Amino acid sequence: MNAPITRTLLIAMALTTFSATPAQTDQHQDPQREERLAWWQEAKFGMFIHWGLYALPAGEWKGQSYSGIGEWIMYKARIPLAEYEQLATQFNPVKFDAEAWAQLAQDAGMKYLVITSKHHDGFAMFGSQTDAFNIVDATPFKRDPMKELAAACAKRNIKFGFYYSQAQDWHAPGGAIWQGPHEDAPAWENPRWDVRQEGDFDTYFNEKAIPQVRELLSNYGPVAIIWFDTPLNVVNVERAARLVKVVRELQPNCLINGRLGGENQSDYDSEGDNAIPDLSRAGAWETPATLNDTWGFKKNDHHWKKPEDLTFKLVDIVSKGGNYLLNVGPDGEGVIPLPGCDMLRVVGRWLKVNGEAIYGAGRSPFGGEFGVFSKSKTDRHGKPLFEARRTWRCTTKPGKLYLHLFTWPTGKFELTGVKGAVTTAYLLADPQRTPLQVTQTGEKVSITLPEKAPDTIASVVAVEFQNQESQEK
Ligand code: FHN
Image 1 (spheres, rainbow, N blue to C red):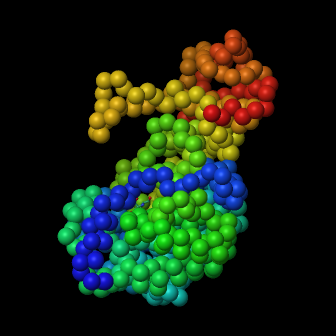
Image 2 (cartoon, helix red, strand yellow; image 1 turned 135 degrees about the vertical axis):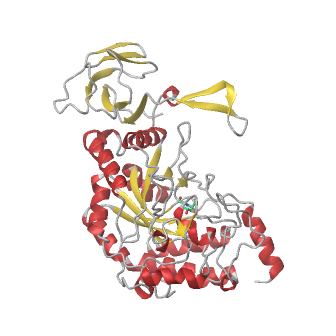
Image 3 (spheres, rainbow, N blue to C red; image 1 turned 120 degrees about the vertical axis):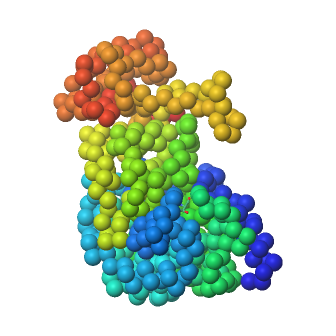
């Protein structure tokens, strides 16, 4: 690539945001897309896994700690390619246990799993004929963990998917590189830090990205999702269409997330990282989120969220119409950090009792429970501040409402704006489903509750209606 073109491309890249992704999909009136999405709409909760060579430095390089997300260490410390390649010679995650990872996803109540097959560092975590910089050919481990994980997921009926960084590749000549700023890292005049990165994007795209996507979709059985990321502005409509063609040719049922690039070619929208919309959102969308403050393992990140908060976020997202893709970052030995496992199992236990109100559930018909826009306070963009409320949420199924009570009311729970005649209400935590006392006057419903909440995180009251019509907004 000649210098002026490189410069223009890189400047243009800097003008695009890479984390928050605007709606890219035109999800309307495409019956095939609707069909592809059916299982995913039911699933609601998935496991994201960021695992790669970056798990070894774990946020530190040559004695220096780097702030922010750990999988960006190569970029932040501007690690020369030859030095980064040395990590592969040390990568031997002998404690990796695909069965244990898939079992954790199952225990957490997660119905699908998406793992980094190649992140921005360019290292393939699968056996690749395309590029020797991969886990089978370049590490002492020599195993293909993706094969093992695909099999472990299939055994448990967990849908299996791959993350693939289609634009950014800091190792292949011509791969795109974020210009910055990124967290604490500045904006670089020339974001490339190693001459080996020089090259032409199309050569990288044609000779590495497309063939590797082909490998992923040919060698691992059914792939439920291919999760692209940071298209920058290099994955334009034409390049995106080429990726879509490969996906549709090899695995017609495979879903494509909302960070492909180009326009209107994804199956569902990806929200920004850890971004949950304030209000309900139509269409198919997903929030990818972290358990602490990093995706890839960082030894000093102990800033774990609480299981109560994760459960709230899951319910909040489902009640607004979305899916929750929650990340774990295994370490260099192949172990998922224990605090993450413990938290996920708490969410899973809650789902065992209350899963009926999550899987396949629709959005809230109300909306006031999400919060209100402040009349006096503004956010950092100068827009009215959204003051979120967290006391309750509502999900729906035909003829049913599910009230998720995060704060247990004294005596009664009052609901207004209810359409239809209530026939019965009961707690999902009550195996006998003993009817609760309900009074209804027009659109006002009052449910008498026991003194103590049966579930310390959130108790769910199921409310049934005479009419089987959908209660969803
Ligand atoms: O740059 C990546 C980041 O490392 C991580 O993979 C997240 C996950 O959504 N995606 C990008 C930033 O949005």
